[in-house]
Image 1 (cartoon, chains in turn green, cyan):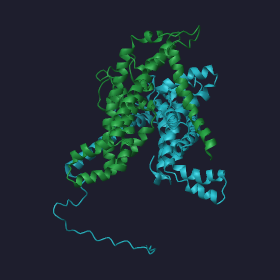
Image 2 (cartoon, rainbow over the protein chains, first blue to last red):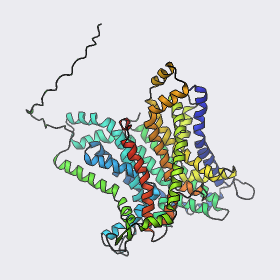
Image 3 (spheres, rainbow over the protein chains, first blue to last red):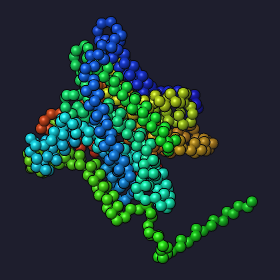
Length: 278
Length: 293
């Protein structure tokens, strides 16, 4: 293929992303600023932002709290799994298989499964023979336990596979060399494994955080209605019939994108500082 | 300088000496042993339980005809959940999800290939901007993309189904482009040049040399793109405008109600199995030497 038509085809590949990102984001920002009213003249205003201002702090707190807890758990569990996978053996192969299967499960299906496991009439309550009145409210409770565990479960598998993938290609030689030079297990973990894993941990952690922050269905299915996470609030506002709520939904969406961009920028800065990032 | 073409037989491997030098543990230093080995295996078992546990209630409920509360196992086994799931439109939703996943994969894989090839070979105009644009859908939450694009598509009078495919393709291209960029970076155009020299047409080189060489990567990319369409919930709700009722939508409506546990389990299993089967096929196919999925 000559560069001429190939150059044109490359641009064709970017059309969907251009429509969705530039168009979608542009229309969201425009609508949040009152420039795309359903009826009446367009007028630049921040009414949509002031309209949701009273609910925003608690929603941001809930969303960021869920994202921080899920990401921390996912990185800890997934990182541990990656170290065990790299060590090899029969159990490591089982872990790889289970991890790969978990990654393919849709989040909504994961939420349904976690619900059947953790609800007051769920499998765990039945296994331990706890009556519903004594069972902690994990689903729809004040601490968002089921929501956090669903994200942590799915994303831990993702973290494990990516981190193990980057470690297997590079760690063996360094690890052996350090062992020959007399480094014990803890020292090798601290000075060889963790620095080598750092870039992929930062990357997968940031992806998990951003995904969790903007995801809707898990928090909607397993969470409670007040205070609402940002995404649940935006979807509810979008679905309401009143004319003022659509710009408000767009305003909440803009807040989520701003937070995601900040996290992505922070992750990128961290990546560039980590020693082995090329 | 003379070059010897005579092949040198490999040296016969010396029999392993049973005599150990002082301080030689007799196994690689990095292999764990004793307490450390037990701790490692215990931890691995715990993690296996962590990953497998959420799937257990799905299997049990899927095979339960009746399961009254305090009982640890179903009180009556059976396939009642399957018939209820079929009555809830499970089969039609399954077919729609399959079609959606395959459509997204069919469009996003060649688009990803074209983008990856252009970026690797340096044909792409403004490569940095293009890369940023191609990967930017990953940064934007699905529902934000759906919400904004929905307004745009409605104003442009694009049919909901086309809009749905467009948004999902945009969300899948980052994955296909990423997988295929790695593949193209390692791809040797020498084979294609040789085939051209031997008189093959461009079309023939594409179908008989280029695509076969990239099949493993294309399969992995298509699998990831399929997953984007297969798993989606919120874009289908928003942009699909209620016209495309997929498996996640049917599962969501069953799961948000009360007392549908068996139906939810059957629908969930139906949503989990196809990707896992595809994954197993990919992992065990003749391409596996190229690396696991």
